[in-house]
Image (cartoon, rainbow, N blue to C red; front, side, top):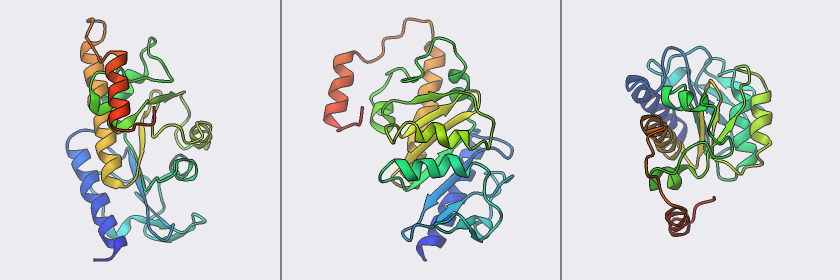
Length: 214
């Protein structure tokens, strides 16, 4: 199986798993993968992640011209901002997962580090998560906001919209965005309850042991 065929199959398989588990619904969410030749595969605009057809995944060249498949997601500027600014990005996943969106709306979270340090795995897979302000869906300003981070964050949450995570490959991005959603769920479950998260020393130990960009 060619690289492109395998990636098309993986995009559809992972997207369906996320849809079936309620991590995104309707025609929301999108995924992209950078191939070894620099071209991109992207989920098509207006498509449901639960019912993707590998043959209809959008294939774009380096100049973002459509080579095959259906027209791509309107969130192209959001995806390409990560590819252009964060070294080693091989895939980007964007969801409308409920707990992450809910956490983004709370008034007392730190926009520069919106996930509380509740587990070591959130730190290991995500580093610090940036909350970006509300921007209209599809607006190129989304990409501008990510570019403004200059590659310092692999994960952001668009306020009132949803999380976006870049990873070295599709599986890494998938595991990271699922960790983000689970940590957001824990944060909401324990919000205001005086939960004991990781201490400053424990966070530092995780960062040092696993060489995290913190």
